[in-house]
Length: 369
Image 1 (tube, rainbow, N blue to C red):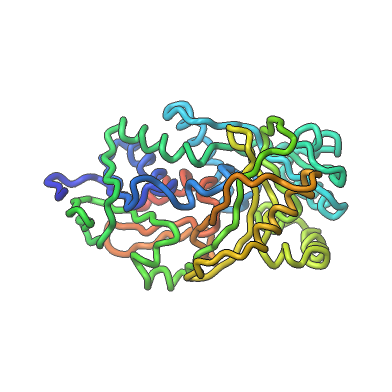
Image 2 (image 1 turned 30 degrees about the vertical axis):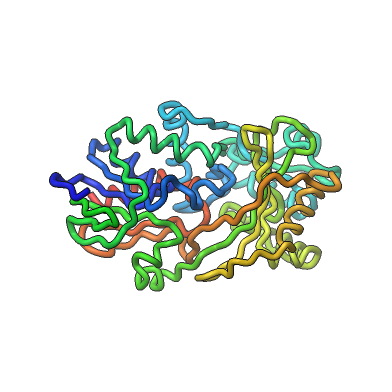
């Protein structure tokens, strides 16, 4: 596979972060080669909710998320994958949660539209304990099992060369060594997500990178209806940056810790999205470590199922699939570092790669080029 002519950019990793850099490079007229150790993307990019939740971000994450939103809409048309401009409903089931949503509306205006109880139930059909909510109309939904593959196919049509089943051995200025030979490249982006510590262990340690393991499930929708928006809850408020500046959020956190300590300890983000086939992706819990045991306790799945069943107002749910999600986690939301001249190591270390990757990629290439 050793190349004679160098490409302008070699991208290591065909997850959404790597693909975003390839898309951005193509838009700038660069020649690109993408290396992926597996035969297709199998990591965080296909195991998530497919939720482009830009509205719930803050700071740089919000900036990247809004830029990525424009790219998602363009790519859906050009690459031909399913997308919905359906927004997100944040359901309030307690007065303190509704107070937080009022504070969010005061700050964001039309980007966070307040809903009364009947409007929430009309959009998402939950249990009777819902008292109101808010609509974040700018958020998107895609099918994460379809979109990365569609983007890779589209990139191939644009002249990008993909080397599937090709593992990275090392990088150095001007050269990428792989399990199938070497590629000459003027610039390199290493976007291997939570496996960044396998490639650059010292760099990962310096940034405090760990893995975040999620428990997620796909279930039959018990109400058999079409749900356009994604659904977030009070538990979600504890995990998204836009809510952190709401003065009364500590009251929500304190109540949930008092009333549902097991859920809070498990890092529950009680939410769901609907897939094109009508099933629901539900979850998720969060646990952090460098290396996880391979054994899963049933209690976490039972927690997610019980909480979601209660949210939907049904006694139980029919499980179709279970899986572990995984992403890189670090104190800062984005890792961008320079392992050597003309290379960048890039990882979204906050679990919002689908939401922000296309905005991040533009920033990285602005610097790298």
